[in-house]
Length: 349
Image (cartoon, rainbow, N blue to C red; front, side):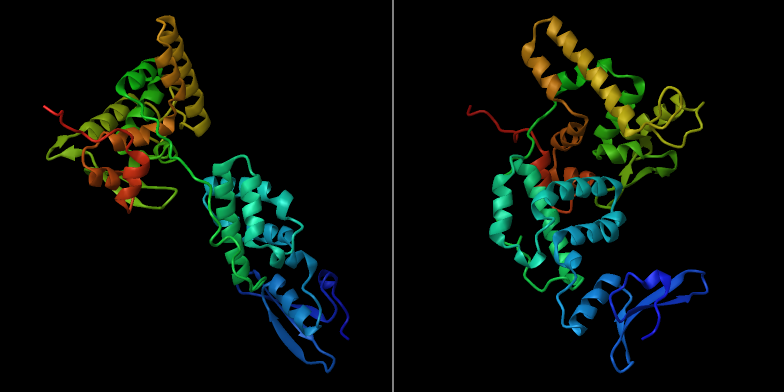
């Protein structure tokens, strides 16, 4: 039997690593199995799949770390989560952290639909449970692609907890109360979010060079949907065009390339936005409390920056136009989730 090199001593018996240096300088690595006759059997370039093939050739069970969910979670984080958008990475890591206590030590082939349903029922955070099960379902599908199981995805067919979409609508009284107390950069962010109907994360990364002629170009981080939002009506600047012109004039002395900048010329981060939002909202609540309007205090307290997107969708008369601005491929999502005021109706007489 060939002697082991130092870097391959952690491999199972008769399994070897073949390394070649590419022209690019990177190493090309593959694995093979040396049988009793001295014949080299290729195992492929994926170490986990190579170990599974090794176990089959040796007539042994798969390595424990490839049978239990802990190893599968680890590989999913390394190979799949790491390639997703930053916000999705954060969400997936939080979801997997919640799943681990129940599933880490479980062999993948032992998990059944009843197991998933039990997890769903035991979770007190019902909406979060739905997201966690959705992530777990994707992990099972990827594990099937990796050859770590041949079983059907146990998440399929398991009922989700009922979800009620957020139904908060910020009317003009609430909007004006917060807007009056906002710093100028927060006012800019509110106006830009309302006129473009985009998510907070997408509003914060809008840049001066996104303005292309008569359009503001947008690529949504969540869906990668591309939009060109009109900045003119005919030859005249519309509300968005006027807003961006005012922002450009106000921030002319700053070299920052982003549209929304602080008074010091720094790009507005999510934390900076949240801090300014919280301060403006607290000031608005205090003013409403001083005049004894407890209902307004409650409404202001419930107002979140993310509610600006559905406010924009609700105040566009044509649902098709609203759906187009929000970047939805299906109008029913706009209607069901984002339009938060009732249809216009005529009185009986």
